[in-house]
Image 1: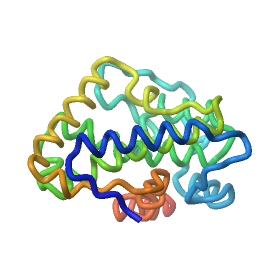
Image 2: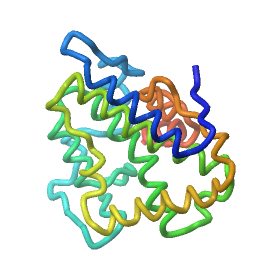
Image 3: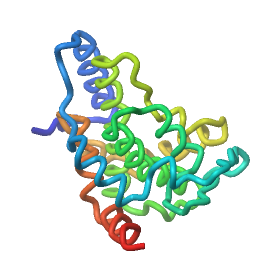
Length: 210
């Protein structure tokens, strides 16, 4: 079931209201994730993400907007290391990795406006970004020790500013088509959509054949 807000501001309000209701969740509740531990471990193996795959020395390159990816798995090395250190559950590591696909596109949009050229693409990217944030918010109501990786990825003022500027560009591109924005009733379903997206499936297929 989808929510179709008449305007973007109303959509933001609806998401905040839903989040405030989620705050009443207790430890007996849980949020269903789109993959279990076994499938997450399998994905990490195909993605070649583990502490042994990281370079011996992980460079923290905060001067470059995109950072350093010495093991060439399309994930910034310092962010990848932070995920592996922070999360015991492989499901959470996979979620953090999938988030990079959305967040990297925001950074790319800030550098090259041709990264997103259509209204449909702009809406999809904005919805994915907001759904990721909302999903982590809900998970933190169940597990208060859970770290959201958003500030780990956007860990410098340069990266935070680039994110904000990219989101502004998306809103400008969407323009008066805000009534077409639909947010999923289950925000964490964004990760199921990402895992089945063509770019990520192609990357996993190529990487697992190396």
